[in-house]
Image 1: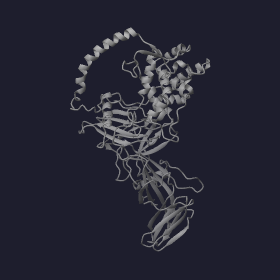
Image 2: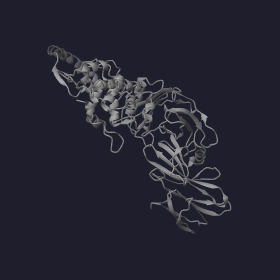
Image 3: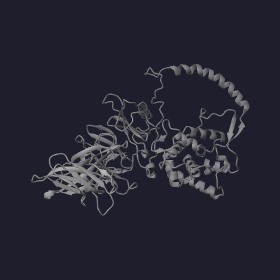
Image 4: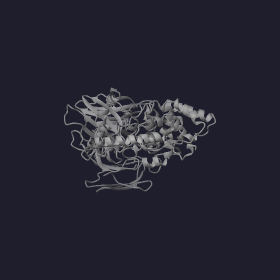
Length: 617
């Protein structure tokens, strides 16, 4: 059978829901078993390879949930299968499934011996590279990325070696894989019957002796706990996964899922085990930031960092949805501390830094592997240049500074490696949580150009606007993923009093919710005045129209009602105690009504498509 004719795995992430890990494993079981069979050492007997291949695939289900950190669906299951096959160094007697009384072997073929010999001459990583290209039809670049997810240290070289073997087989007139490599189609034959009978008598005697010795041990409580309830301990937790050091260079999906494990204690199994065990026992009493779930990981955790900082042990883990920071500072007293934060959908910016530790000197961050340069800047002093920030193995020096309540704190200015994007600089603001928020800026509309998307807030105009508007954000606390300042209109004030900037500031949280606030930025560069705030999706990509009103007094004392709307608004209706206006919006999308009266006023806007809007809040 040509395993390459099996149905191709469905792509994950387009329309529809991703399949669970169990559904993926069942649907693609034959392909995955064949992949494990090809990756396992080719110099072993066929019975051992068949049984081990099935064991590797059946053990590929995550401990909890159907997602591997940073992956989902078939890609995640394939990565676990390859990882299991690559790590199998020997053949323990307790491997499952168990086969008694018969020996298994794949259908014989004349070409098997030659291919077995060539596979035996390749390292395990190259065999895996051959398997993913032969069975999944991946190109070399795709194969390298799949191998990197599986933890291969040099994925590009392994993919190249696998491609060379596959090319030579096709070139030799082998258009399909021999049937001897379909580990789901096997022949049976009896084993050594006399030896099995002798072993059966011996095993029975040994079992009686072991049962008497083992039962008291199983019934005894855990040392020092007085419990026998099976709660996880550091010795019995599943070791966290690790990503290859160069995975981020080969992957098109940047985020926490491609971070390598760093820190001087990353090989300290006891420390890392305690951190994983603490997370597995997390419950309602665990410190959890807004938007995160105070519970155990939903997948096998991925190790991001384990090290010692200023006398404290710190471990950082993720399961693709949540960040977990485990800290143990003997000098502080109180025992180990576990903190959880939402971290789903991290990317090149909103997954570029995590707070490892805070103390009196400031915050120390672990930076993404694609960060080539780091600096700090004062958000309230846009004219000042950034100050370089030193970091080693991704860990920064302390970043001092605090912020006024409701305002973003110290700001990091990071620059990506050219491998990711040439001259890509961006800002992250400390909001007191594990992950800083990404700061962006949307410039005012240009009548001659399409609507502008948010951009990095590193330009001169963006920095000036953020200096004025930072403390007008709708929220500035843990759980916020991104803060955007949208300058939706500019208005010339009456009596030549300068230009007023109208802004909508949006906070997007890690859990997908958010809030918005309307604000005016005065012409003198002073601090913005927030007009109103509301939860919801206002001023987001899904609600791109807005309108706002503001009462202002001119230098000569005349009161005005100022109104501004975004670019798609076609008509405004303003009702004040002493004035009423119902007209098409002028090109500036702004109105200034003098002497509007002292009572409340109402504003309604209508877009060109007929949608009616009211001011935020």
